Amino acid sequence: MPKFTEEALDTWRKPASETEEQKISNAIAMIKDAINAHETLKTKSIEFIVQGSYGNNTNIKLDSDIDICAMLKDTFYSEYREGATKTDYGFTDGTNSFSDYKKLVIEALIKKFGTEHIIVGNKAIEIKSNTYRVKADVVPAFQFRNYKQDKGNNSNNFVEGIKFISSTSDVIVNYPKVHTVNGISKNTNTQRKFKRAVRLYKRIRNKMIEDGLPIPKCISSFLIEGLLWNTPNSTFTNATTWNELLKNSIIFIYNNTNEEAKCKEWGEVSEHFYLFHSGRKWKREDVTSFLTQMWNYLEYNK
Image (cartoon, rainbow, N blue to C red; front, side):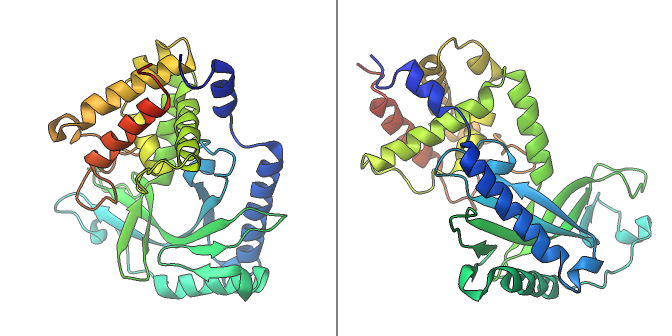
């Protein structure tokens, strides 16, 4: 018999509670108000992108912190197909400095929340939680335009991402909107089981940690979502129970991550970067170790 009943798993696959949802909404509204009220920032074109588990609708109880990007669109970074430059598109150098923009965002958040509630990290600005709102990470970024697939110098034909520079001078490019669209598509194509499975994996991981198992710290929500993204849709749609879905997905992911050749082409959900590469915090061995622990924890051998 599996460790957990179908009734228990069916509860775990659900998103955060209404109370948590309200605290998330409160945090998002306060962050937008803070930046939109700033004397300088209110004159700029800024789009707010909710990222991470909440933005992708895979958040669970006790995992409802939010990650929100304040993307400046007045100035953007860009990359082009081989042989093309900004001149071909009629672009000129922008007037905004990223470091200055980040300082302004920090200034706006401190004014709204108070210095004691703000922690400036390497990549994000953390806003501490209280009884009214969840913890939030605010990432100042510039819009990033990827023109690599454009062949006709069409300034509107780009894949939109974000780009920012960490405090340690690392340059980070992400595609949160593409990630969201791809996740929605896979969820639709798997009878809405993809995101539910992500929540199940995350809840089980958390339960394993609570029960004292030495789970690798690198087994993040992002990694779990990426592993299930690369799992065939049929694994989701053919399963008639949650335990069957868990069992079959663990087997597939394990069998395809125990050798580099089998998963070297796996992409993250945005499909703009490989899930496994030298710069990642995780390795294939971490994944197979976790899956072995998870399989035994769920008592699928009994």
